Image (cartoon, rainbow, N blue to C red; front, top):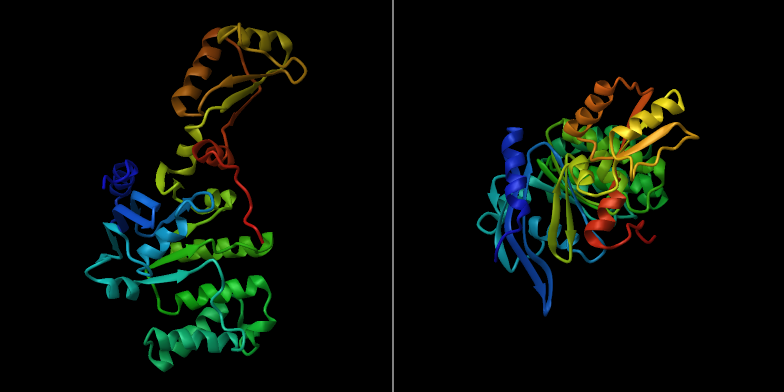
Length: 332
């Protein structure tokens, strides 16, 4: 199976960043009967970064996480996680990763501390060390006051924080977060973002799937868009936005005379200055060469702009254009 063309770009980005890859995959394929869920995707995620995988429902995001975390096998392809080959050293992969799924895996009948100690036992952490880690995580996630309370009394945000804390009890170097903030209120979501940023600052690699485009925009170092099992784009948020038409540079002038002089410098046929706002919209991708060309044209004609702003498509536009699906909030 031919690997996705996104692989060279991702590998080049990793090399250019100077960080070794924490996750690599080539030609990952998965089918259920006649339905191909993944069609030869390729990924390269540098250590200590956040990689976001976007896509509509059914695109293959969760399947990708399940394969890379050894929960299900791929039909074809190769992958390495934390330096361990997915097939030859699955135990090494499991010892290096943490997984937080779409739904909290906490036990409602146990307390917060008991949930953490249970995970410590499952990760073969010595009892004393497990208790120390549990206490540290409860403080880190601001759950100390709820240490002895049964989880059934927790809010959704508290459950999600405990769920992530349980993932960390084994001190993983790579964490898979499959739609971790689904169903959280805006305040709890932003709290979770800060926790994720803190993990990356400590050197952890985050593989994030999400349908909240703002979440990917806020957190991810690089983003890949998955559609019908195929990677259709990969890059930074800004790189992806520049691929979509509709961006423009907005210039505002002090008076109508300067506005019309500026409009005449570019395309007087299609350029329609806004005389009420004294502004001019010039199509452009917002790149440095484009900005330089606009400023040089104004300077050469002796026309001074009062204000310049760059407007680019957002990730909603990227998502809609690349997948043909409207970006929607997950069903709650």
